[in-house]
Length: 299
Length: 164
Image (cartoon, rainbow over all chains, first blue to last red):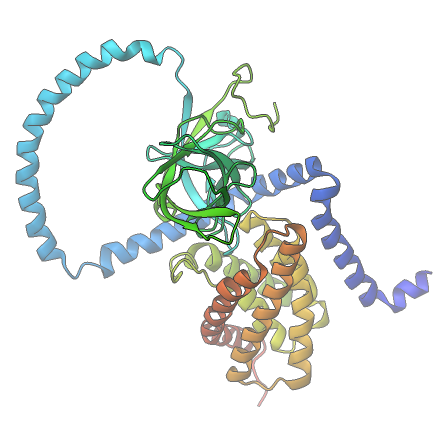
């Protein structure tokens, strides 16, 4: 036996490597909990590297912006002078508005009795390939973030927490193909399910509508023929999946396709969030006693 | 020394993939510099044990892509042997061969990884991804092959200068 291994050391090594790699791949199906722990372990280990790489990337961008792209500096300077004058006038108006705002805010305080705690996190990385649409953020378990917590921006829904390590977390964007969640058409209250398609969003209605990400947009297939959906309709989260709060804006319907010979309609959705320009996001922190605590997360 | 140089090359490839690739992305398409480095090394008559380098590169790509752990490790592992075989059987120190090799082998790597993705999630649009993501990625990768080729040639000459 020993002699066999000595003679075929290379072949044994190649086979062993293949077995290890395939086992790693199949682990996610045989034991998802262990796979999550492995993901978290890797994520914790690579976090310093990812931060360092993100910093160098920012430096390269700054170098370009500060030194290479200064060709139109003079024209921009003149434009900015004019803009400053306009802004000074605007400032006077804003001071008045600010005083009024503070008075009104006092009256609205009762609305903040049970505010949803949000944690702001900066985006420090993205997927290294073209198939997954994720963001790495610089806040993690230590900031109270858990798996499946919703991630939002002022504009609308961004995604959900895919995995979390002590100092960082991975956000699966709604346009990622693996992502699907229930939505409502704001005007007609039609329920649907959205799915990412790795470049957009696709709205499906196989279970009365699911929005699917398609990369940089969203799409819904198989919407009931009688469902009331039109171009320009706003699509919001329905709150039924137990991940996103109800009523968050997802996008706008840009195209509805109805074929007479088909049983369902399809709709393309333009997401409100520009996923290429995200620099920071808010993670909604849910307490376990909260009825909206995600169903599929750890303690 | 060779091991040290390989580790450095691997780290440089990873660094370029995470810092430079998003900046030079065209219409959202990032080149796969980790794969380009691995394939150029494979095509330059790599040693038999470099499959470990290929597997570790794939694993690093898996980790930093935040997808399914092991997909790229498998595809890089398999494609490395194809690259090595191509390098051994038809390789001459020729840049054009390397460019064509990277194009074909990138398609092969895409074929493997997209097939694995589709096997694990049947809703993955196989053709759409092959034509819309893998093929443009292969073109992008082969355009980036010359600089990687020259960089690795320089490194090889520095480490092992020609005797004549």
